[in-house]
Amino acid sequence: MRPHRSTLRLLGSLLLATALGASLTGATAPRPGATDTTSPLDRIIPAPSSVTPGGTPYRITDRTRIHVGESREARQVGEYLAGLLRPSTGYRLPVTARGTGGIRLRLAKGPYGEEGYRLDSGRDGITITAGRPAGLFHGVQTLRQLLPAAVEHDTVQSGPWTVPGGTVEDSPRYAWRGAMLDVSRHFFSVAEVKRYIDQLALYKLNKLHLHLSDDQGWRIAIDSWPRLATYGGSTEVGGGPGGHYTKDDYREIVRYAASRHLEVVPEIDLPGHTNAALASYAELNCDGVAPPLYTGTEVGFSSLCVPKEITYDFVEDVVREIAALTPGRYLHIGGDEAHSTSHEDYVRFMDRVQPVVAEYGKQVIGWHQLTGATPAEGALVQYWGLDGTDAAEKEQVAAAARNGTGLILSPADRVYLDMKYDASTPLGLNWAGYVDVRRSYDWDPAGYLPGAPDSAVRGVEAPLWSETLEDSGHIEYMAFPRLPGVAEVGWSAAGDRGWEGYRERLAAQAERWGVLGIGFHRAAGVPWPSA
Ligand code: TNX
Image (tube, rainbow, N blue to C red):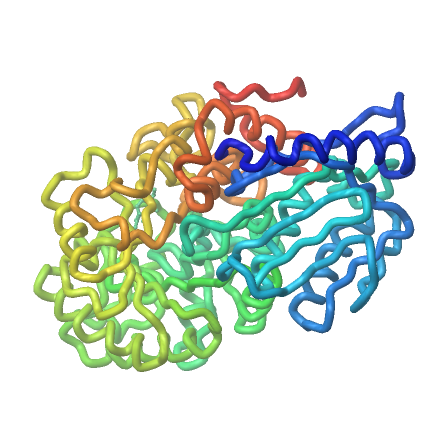
């Protein structure tokens, strides 16, 4: 974090205020002798842009109200906050338009951007100010992390519910801070996806990329090609029952994500990774013969039939139906590991399919292999190379970036959450090497890809491939503790973060994860509290 600006200037008045606060307002200052569970103002992940601690803490009591003004969206954030606080505090916490004191969520013009906020905490209350509802929501996550971990319980706890005094001013470095969940290799229920969404929101991530189709399963109902889901979705890696989202399921995921200010980015992986579709409809195959369903973990063996016209009818139907279900701006068309598609066919396919995405009002995203064809105007590519990726491949992506293609950075040997931490990790893969907590945190997106302008970097995204992962417990073991680090890489300025301070802040999250039931990996190198 930057040195606490204005600390000196404030010091005199804060000392005075603290002394007055302590003597005049016994109710808000921690009682002498009571355990002070107040967490320091600067223990937040991701690290805020600036933190100025000082002044009297605020204590949430049974008289606290949440004031949200007239905005419907601010009220939604207020209701979300109340929903977080009521079960553990046992307080009513009414959400009201106006009033003084208490917790105030305020939309106002100011230097906050799309997602920034300011949080002021003192004796009389807490005010979160933002230009947009997303900023209020992120401010609420900061407030949540400032409260004792016991606030995460769903039964009444004793408190006290004290928030340290001071000011946090904060806005993200990158607009794209994503997580990808592979629901194809193993299927995850709507409830499991929502659980992950809540975990992403706690660390201010704002994109949920769903990998909805692959060789092992097609996971979204498409009315015009119903067998994709009913047959293509009927299994998964290892031969389990698989599953798919009905359109209502998918809408519910989108709605829930939006209520946590996350945008859903659907991916239909094309033209490779399509065995589930090819198995569902014989006519999509060049030889007219449907292959069997696939439950192994090989990649690169399937391809849509590029010369056949029906391929484009299929793609258009799928794009149209998914675009209609998705309020977000993007549609991810995959494009990775098309080892069974010739280069010429790959280029032809992408030239034809990208305009279809635009026709239905969406912006194309592809894995970085899309730079082997011509990325459409405004397209983003997701880079998943490694330190050891050959220079020519890196340069191909960098050249596209110089040409205006935006970059989402997902380097596999940094942020692939399905990579094992070390040789003893029971889950995950290791084709990109072992990725320990420090490695996933200690890198900088700017200048990461040689020759790519920093302005091309839209942000970072942590993929979680699910060949070896079957339920929320598995997801959490791989995502925690690495996911918060990727969130900080995406949110915090390079100068505001560093491994030594981060590992302390990370360790302090463990208690909260315990209450939330997140079974994290107690990775070496982090000073975890004793279990
Ligand atoms: C590579 S990354 C893949 C996936 C695998 C993953 C496993 C990418 C675009 N393709 O098909 O699931 O490795 O780590």
